[in-house]
Amino acid sequence: MIGAEVTLGVVLLAAAGQRPRASVNDAAWLAGCWETTTNGRVIEEQWTRPRGGTMLGVGRTTANDRTLDHEFVILSVDDQGRLAYEAHPHAQATTTFLATEVGNRRLVFEDPSHDFPQQVGYERTADNQLTAWISGRANGQERRIPFVYRRVACPPAVTP
Image 1 (cartoon, one colour):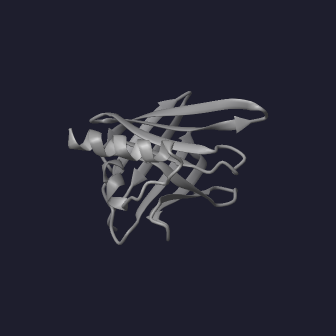
Image 2 (cartoon, one colour):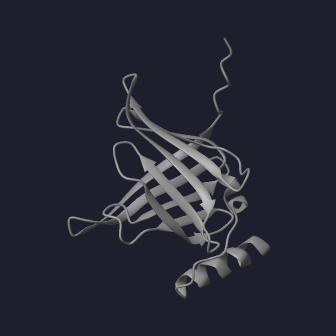
Image 3 (cartoon, helix red, strand yellow):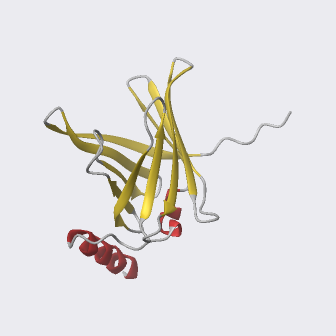
């Protein structure tokens, strides 16, 4: 119940227009490997555990044994105490989204000035399930693209 109160407090701060103060440790539940398959494409994300004030994420989309897209992400806390999602997508400019919700099962980041998406979110919907999304306005239309991941075992290191 304490987690629900903390999450509610953070949500209320965001609703009041204040950015929540957070720690990268607040996102520790995201650590591990996540995967979804849709339309013959495998989309996977892997997140490191918090260490040194950061979490690192890597995403990759593949189909027919070919990489179609990839992205690197750094989660950290900015100088004003806000959790920041610094996205480095393939062949696009780096964008930093700032947390508007930080909870023990949900993270939401926003950059209203970005073309698309303006919002990136993650919600742990079950022990082994994660729903991520990107959303915002594109070409005058509201869009929301969900990704429903399941937890998978992280691949072991390969030694020569």
